[in-house]
Length: 283
Length: 342
Image (tube, rainbow over all chains, first blue to last red; front, side):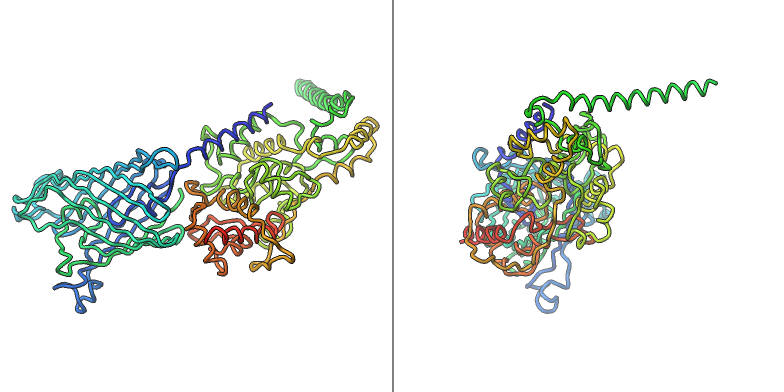
């Protein structure tokens, strides 16, 4: 009787796990390129990420004299991210930062609200809330965006809903919408920015795919030189880690930075090569 | 004087206990009248009744609490109430071992039988031996496992408890099991040991066994032992296997091996391996493109060699010995991949 019960429990458990019929691998990593994807780390998995952006390829700061940007460092972020459960992830990172927002520590929480299924739920939906804190010494220039008078002025927040669908084995689409808030901005800027974005991924093989990522800020002040971040990338899956090669106009590698600190213009050759490499560990 | 009385009482208690256990065993066999009564008996108990020696892992009876704890550790990697630490952060036993009979004929345990029985019953097609009947085996980590684990296999060859410990520490890259954990797993093994009904004895063999038990005749010992393999052999195959003579592809078999073997661990969302995939064309095209390579993405290579634990990547894949996947079956798998990649 006892053994029968054990067998019955096993059958029920195995049936339960397969009846979900979930869709996985809409994107290869937890980021599409620079922004979050709907992918999550598994429970008790830790990911170590290094994201790096070089200097301008062309234009005044690029060309052969700067070896097409390889001599310069635009931004670099080193981060650890962790799966508390399969549906709740957290992360902590540090990046060099861009323009006046330098010495940035960021953290985020990410919750999966829905996972696409073969028959049933049509979408992956994830909510991401992140904040960044610039710890560098405040500027003495009162017109600067880092003329911090209180610690809270150093904070930047980004909340976004990320929705994706794996259309086929090769094609994945993603849409994101959110609100980005900087506690301190220059007098001609606005604190709260509403943005939307989109990602297209097309896989040529199991291990190689092309990705395009674009984010548009809708209420940007016309008095600033900010541009919308656009990036193209190649992802390479090597088992245990994946490698992403990016060409982008934005320098920042964290959403709290690149959404409001992108001033590079594609048409002026102000685009750059970057890469992200990550490695997953089981804890 | 007091000490002498206490010692006497303890001694008498021990004698009474031993006698009652002996009587329990005797009673179980003395009440046998019909061959149907035989079928639920443990094979090992019957062999002991016929005069065979007890193995060193012998348990008189499976304690149900211990069985449940053993079951939970085998299936979930720790007790379900999480009162003990995970044995391994990489694997649980069921990633590589089934818990049920895998063949129709235990006396031969052929690879063909394993595949057809597994496909019929939708069993995982795994590289390691089932735990069902593991308690009845007499040697573990046999054959070519010495090539993989070296001298580590020596203490395991005749001692099941050492084999379990080696599996926990080396195969699953986990921690050493504590004595109570080993004991619980052993009780779980005891609960899934071979029964007489598993051995497919015919009526005349059952009649003879019934008579032999009553008369303590050892004739049936050899019959019983011939009905199951007491050793799971392990032979590592060639890393560049040659297609067997007169081979004709069985794509159904290949599909079963891919879905119930490869995807058992590599399937999406399982979080068992670093390389997850599905039964989609992209995956199968990728695997097809690597078939001729000599690396861990090549199916014949990885099936026969597995991967090894290295610094920074302790988790590894066990290989399929020829006893768990024949070369014919490997070519069925290869041909299934080829057929689905176009």
